[in-house]
Each structure stands twice: as C-alpha cells, then as structure tokens.
Length: 360
Image (cartoon, rainbow, N blue to C red; front, side):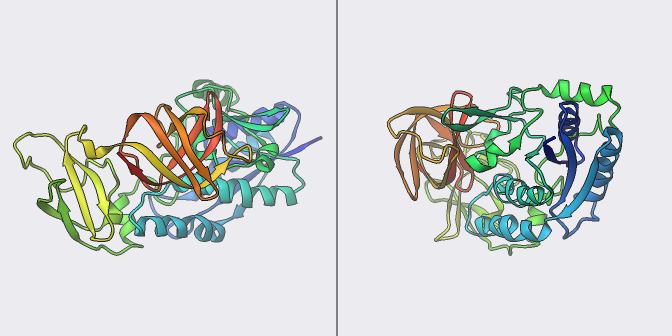
C-alpha cells in the first residue's frame, strides 16, 4: 500500500484531499507545517487554531497526523528573500517561493523520510503523466486554479505529487466536507500569506524595513506629495497613496505608475488608463520550466503577470540562461517587477519567471 503524506493546513481543501486519498485506498498520514513563529499568538496569524482544526479532521477521518516546524527554513529561504525584494523596490510573491522551497522541498524531503511514496496538498491544480514526462495542469475550477503559484515545480517534484481536489469545483469540496462531518466544513478560506494574514500590510512591513521618504511626482515632473518609502507601494496601487483630491480638475483617481530607485522617486498618474500604466514587453529572470526546458521562442502562448488574471496572448522573443523576454499582443496593465510571469499552453502550465522590468 502506497503511503501518501498530506500537507494539512487546517483548511477544508487539504482536509477533503486527505479523505479522498483514504477512500482511494492509500496509507494516508497528515503533516501540519508550522512556518511562522514571530507573532504566532497575535490575532492576525495564529497557527494554533489551524493545528487544532487539522488534528480534529485527522481524528474524524481516522489518520495519524504530526506537526513539523519549518519556521527556520521559511525565514531563511522565503522571508529573507521577501524582505530583500521589497527593499529593492519590487513586489515579490512569497507564495510562489514558499511552494518551491518549503511545501515541495522541505516538506517533500520530510515526507520521504516518513516512508512516503507520494505527497499531496489541497491545491487546485492537476498533474498528468505523458510520454514525455509530467505536466502541470490548471485546476478545473477556473475561479480557484492555483497553478500560477506552482509554476516553479520540476519533474521530480511533480512525479511525487498528488492534487486530489484539483479536478473538483470548490462547491463540491465544501459539500463533501459537510457530508462526512468535517468540523471545518464551513471554515473561511485563508487570504494572503500566513505571516501577514489580515493585518495592515504597511504596519507589518515597517517592523522589518525602515521608512525612507522621498518625492512623489507626476509623469511631467511636478511634485505632488511625499512618499514614505518605495517599498511600501506597488505598481497599480490606488488606495493608500495619500493624494485625496484631484490636482488637475479631472477628478480621476491616482495610481502608482513607476518607481525610480536611483532617485527614490515615486511616480503617480491619474486615471486607470494612463499610458505609463501599460506595457507591451517584459523581461523576466530566474526562469523555471516545468518540462525542464524553455518553450520554443517562436511559439505563441498565453501568459499572466498576476494571479486572477486572464491569459494574454504573447510570444517569447528571447530565452537564455538568465531569463526570457515576452511581447504581448495587447498592452498589459501594471506589470509589476517582483511578481511572476507564468506561461500556459491551453490548460498546461509551462513555467515562468520573475518580472525584472517592463517596457512600452
């Protein structure tokens, strides 16, 4: 009997994943990952309740569960990079790095030591074996698909991974949870990353990064205010800029349009459709390809530059060891350095990279 170690977060998705695997005849063991300790007793990030929920679910399902502390690995491999990126004026996506470095590396290694043949999580994605290897597919529930966050997984990781709820709609996962009496059947989905949770983001970041005020300018060079530090803003941001009124009588809202790290200048523009907010090309670094090699540079594909964004038609113009360049058929809004550009061929996630810069 194949042993499958399931990453159980205390949420409904991983709970139903564990139950489905047991129904399929696997030897299922639950593993609860504790990844953050700095303020675990706060109202915003308490893993204690999540652990209690996961343990309660394991009791109902009838499987063993253990807790393992990956806080040191998380701080070293994910959080340190998170701070470095923000300090450099970029906006990172720590969930992508957490999946690559913790959930499918540290967790996978630990599971193998427990005698696992496979690991499983509650992600909405799918894995398919072909004659050429393993493919990462979108989850069938388009509204919950999480392949964007998993695009750095490689062949070795996919070969050992199961996504039991990836072929189900979320409504069915909730229905299953209720029908088998899981105590967390109605538990709200978690939002954001654990160490931030629902807390005010700017206040959290300020605990680790100092403010560094500088000028806030319009595209034509007019100074319209002062920012508190480039790290505390992201491209396309509308709220929290501190410019309440119209400066040109148009009444259009202000958006963060560009950052100039060299001069510590934040550029803001009025109107969602301001030209500075659109880019047709981007350069990405730290490329990672699910199949092991970059797709054909001449081949058209779809890509998204942020989660919950529809694919946009594009072409890979260049690809090398350092990264790749994409050109989109239509200009893309607020392409943000630090976020991931992820490529797709239909339902197949090909991989992607971290956006370094975007151009008109």
